[in-house]
Image 1 (cartoon, rainbow, N blue to C red):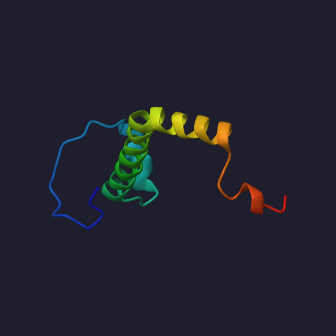
Image 2 (cartoon, rainbow, N blue to C red):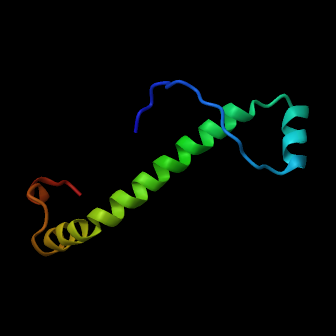
Length: 78
């Protein structure tokens, strides 16, 4: 995901009128809040998709490690 600041583009959103009034009363920047929320949600979705796409390989590696152990097991002090 690009984290550099791209050109901004106006869009239309439908939001709860009371929330908009409260945000404005608190001096909150709706654009910044929306951008931050979208970045967070996109990162969460990317992580969820990555885990779904790789869960089989992760499970196989975990099973292999459980069966054979780690190469460094003999050097552990605990």
